Length: 69
Image (cartoon, rainbow, N blue to C red; front, side, top):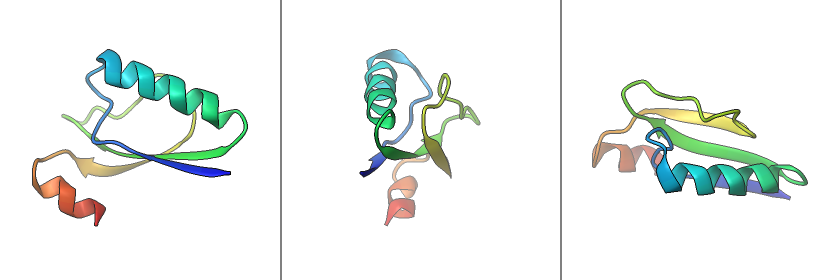
């Protein structure tokens, strides 16, 4: 199965990053996964990215919303 994750960012850590990483890591074991996200202040890397990741540029609200469409 192919699974696409789309999130604003995972750069600041905390609960969002932790839970997203766990979910992506588990689903990547038996599925083809891809993450689409933005950077914040040039920060890109998830800790040991478990899947293919595409960065759409720097997060800038509300302009970044239109990049996804």
